[in-house]
Image 1 (tube, one colour):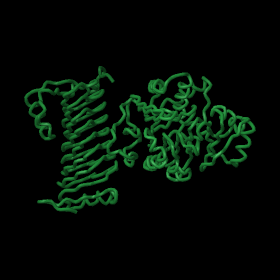
Image 2: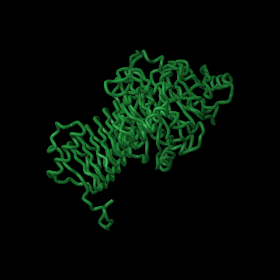
Image 3: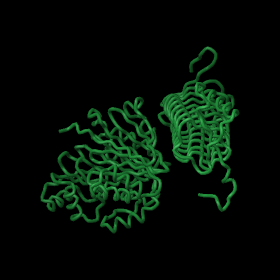
Image 4: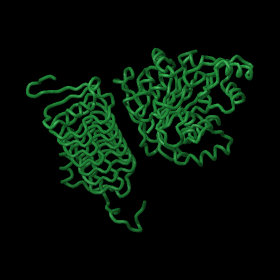
Length: 231
Length: 303
């Protein structure tokens, strides 16, 4: 344990401390302060289920479901994250400085997920209120069945972007390989430019021009089944 | 789930450490399946002596000397045998396909794990860690290795159902996932004269690739044909004596991570299997795109 000017930093080394001990310490009722986790070596389930306004920095690549179910905490992963990073996040923030695998931010209900690199397939699948900002590109079927929240993509999107999307909004600066069923481009009105500027600022990309982005969302033709629905 | 690992070495300085590094990769993937495991090692002189053909006989209960004598008598060449755990490796100064034909004549019922030059395939049931120890895998050397940890879904837990499937000369395939239309493809291959060892879906993929390669197609072409023919979920690692290739299906839900440095190319189902490789902190790391074929060839440093 080392002390900085105004707060305590607790460091855990996963090469010598079992992950379960680390996660249990982060789940303590009175947990507070700043934590550093070293030598993760691709471990799964690191810093899951946090529910306190702590800061956690992971130095290295992580496996599945990193920082899943997060509430309140600010988690930074200095490396790549495996599938399901920040899955079902409720609040707080998660930042991945490298790339993220598939299903990043899946089913998230709140908070902000930032991926500085690329995200794999199905980024933001079934998102329900989370905001996701991807510095690079996203894979196929991103925002599949997204219900609420915002997905910002500074690069390109793979096939079937926004397939069967409900009321989530997608902002895309690059090119999408194809749009999914019922996903359409929509007008960028003043309130959208403002919303996007706020998201870019929150993610640390305030130099981006919001006008360089296009907005996508639901055409709402799949809300009710009709004989004309295509599949 | 199943776990796949593969390591293609570029730096000859690492050849003596192939088995040690591959053991670490394989055992790290034990959580993904501990029903059975298998490995293929290219270039380990103790298992597959250079300049000889080698055939791997799985779960061979007969004494090694008896097998050597019987195969020598049939082949008309001196055949030597080496026992590696549950596997008996037979090798001799003749082509591996000629040796394989002798094995088929003398022991028609035996399970052949693989055959080739510079190739040894070991597989069996049980936990990957136990099997790796029983084979002495950490002490193996070579220029390339692949491995598989199995959680059985599509066929029984037997050595015949264990990966790798090494059904063509020097080649080998490991698979994570399942093929949904393997029965119909199996029928087509059987109609074309292809024989099978098991009811396993992966074997159909391996026989398909071997059939294409035998027909003159290159690895990339054979794998492209596979993506157009097979339905299901799959991450495949396909190796040859001098090549190393990875492909995923269009949905790409089965995991795969590739890392590359000047000294090696490695692939695994999860990053944690790569975390101990030398220089991984400076590796280029990415996930393969769906239906894109990633292919490396060995730079022949040897004359």
